[in-house]
Image (tube, rainbow, N blue to C red; front, side):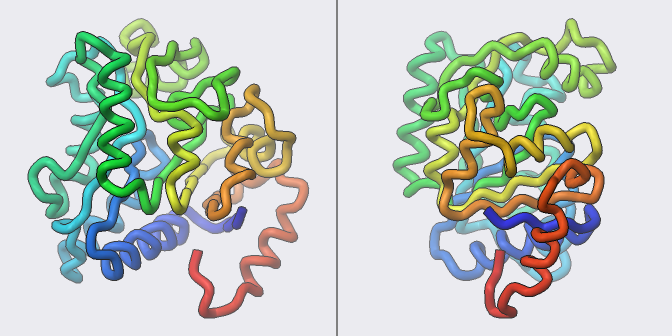
Length: 260
């Protein structure tokens, strides 16, 4: 697990660099997209590179991490609409190239299995963008989730609903109680995981993820078992790390040829 501590703009540039390398070197790259506040600067940077430097997504596919259940198709906080607004319609993804779990399906279990098949059919995810919740959840894998779980229906914790209420005019009662989410087992099959966390409210979750024991109480801790994880942190999110100085030293002294 590589830990990089820098300002938000540098973190966005580093993540965008990794995605750009993928887009420019792979014939059919597959990118995993996340919602929430953490990836927004990454999407802005990618959009800038698309407009100013011709970075193309036309040959790529993308898969979303999760989707609310029981939210109107035209609701601005439906995650498919959020992804369309923040990145998909700002660049040149081909029609039908961006996929999300179907939170409106009559049979949610079948929709979950179908989503797993689509990811496999695309050849798997090359680079997955991730965030982390204040309670250590990744995607919507809440504390107590199986670390080997697949795409499925999950109930959101009250803490997650309270955290997400800021997107629903501050009203937690508007936040859906159910979602479809990629499981931790699904996420762990991506070739490269890039997790971005900013702000002091993420510091304890970040500390547990990187330096704590692997436990379903902090689902993000299973990322310690992945062979290629990059964790991008600002100073506030890194403030609880016991080995912060070592992570800074390691990054500053890595070989020049070595990317994230």
